Length: 256
Image 1: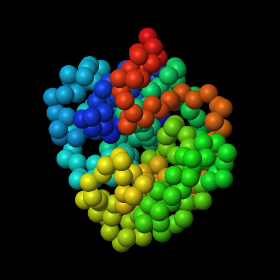
Image 2: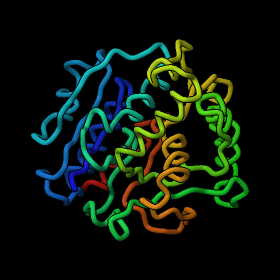
Image 3: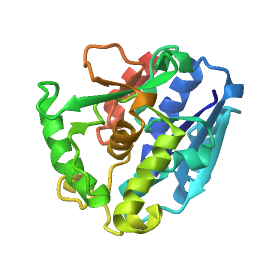
């Protein structure tokens, strides 16, 4: 099977992305002939990717796009369409602040040729504050976008590997609810500010939407299981809204 890696990034996150790219270059051990790697950047990043040494790898395809006023919603919409961009059977999504921290092959991420679809219960003791925020914010976004309540949090695990067909089906849920093409249904002109995350009128959530559809319509194609926070994960997330300088030495150590 061929897998596609996709990251949507922006100007302020390019320093993070440079480390993410290096982590995948170092630790992704599946053949590059069986992997398509695409990074989507906003137009104001033109000329800057090379400065941050992101494009040094001959494996990476870089695409540019004009973002919406709501850049947060635009980034999620891009990731939700990754199957169209990549054209691969499997889609491996990652964000700029996600690092691949150990040698990993596609087979390492599969269980009997099935990706894991992991969730956290809303009443889980694991990181209960985050679960509460996710339920408030993404639960409302799910109702807005699909009309379907979220009964679980599909954002619990940072390993985002899906069948391309799941992304297509997740978009269909939105199109069916709004009776509009996906891109029009989730468009947002409300400028996003991280300080107003809780109040922002999020039109949908990419990973929650994908997890929802996968669990409802393609459950037989996944290993669906509750997320275990004690399991060793190949992906570690470092939250790009935090101070980059405070974690750069940690990132350097990971990649040394």
